[in-house]
View (cartoon, rainbow, N blue to C red):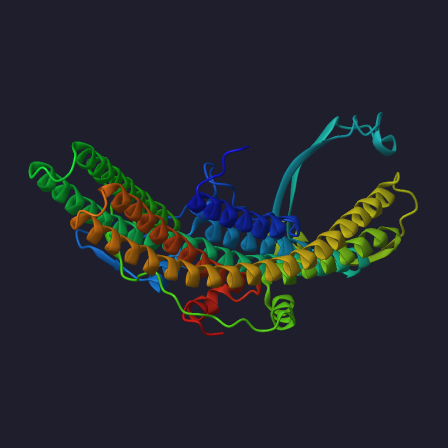
Length: 483
């Protein structure tokens, strides 16, 4: 059988996959893709940040809300998404410029000579005895002129500007969705760190308990009450717990580094997490209520809808390549030998351009626009189904994790009672310390299950908030058990 990942790793991979689906969905729906989250071990913008400020000697007290606020300021994925929004705004202005008047001014001083021979003039001019010169000049003239060009009607440019406006809205919704992804990423990193803190506390208590058992085994061996194997067994148990404590401290240090990278703390900044693993039961609302909220509030769904509208307008713009367009051009200025001897002149002309044959370019534009529209509609339909799946899955995870927390809590109590009784039996000489060691292992396993279930329960709340598009505003309420 294949070897399963440890439970913590499975949770982290699940979160990474969730983030990947969230962001790559937004990428597929936008003309300017936003960066996506990838699996652990590869470079991902949402796992990095732009460090804010410089490290200070003080130890920073970091709460859950402080971490989210820093992530929303400094997370690299969000910063890049903001840049993509600016790019989309620039594309919209580019299309709008084709509809706005273009006004320019020019001042020209021209000095030149002219070759009459090159113009085909030969012989004498009007039978004059004076030969016609080969080159005349130099002569000059001055021209100061303002020019105006305006598209009076171009349906293709109008529809392209409308499509660009919808693309800009899609990019803005994608930026809002990126904020939701940052909250999920920061929340997961913070919960992992405080889960490791709880693991350190329980492992430290187990080390102390194993040390007491080892000391008692040595005393009883010296008194001739127990064999040497009991001492060896308790020593192995002690060293096992010590190894677990060392690993837990190392994991905690690495989790803090990951959290610092996500939220943009300056390198080398020392900080402490001020919150413990919270547990507040959350009574779920009806499924339809969550689905309605998700379809109304999720920014990635709104971005996909805007992208479909943009594709529809782009298709209309491509078809408009068959339509005529109307333009006007005008200029006014002074022209003469010198500015003091210049005369005012002006010119106005309008034209109707009728496309007759463009080599199939318009047809190719329509085919491409049709394909893009079909792709956008398919992605919207897929996203709607994925939202339904994510809401249902997060509710299943929430209910399952809540039940696991209750069972794990009871298991911890039972395991600790078993340990106390086995220690009493060992002290009374009724049993050897094998029973105590087994009870200690049961206690360690029960505490680990409780920590994991508590982490899974809190993470399920954040995932539910993300699934309905309320992560940024509602994550604190959900962790407190409020809707």
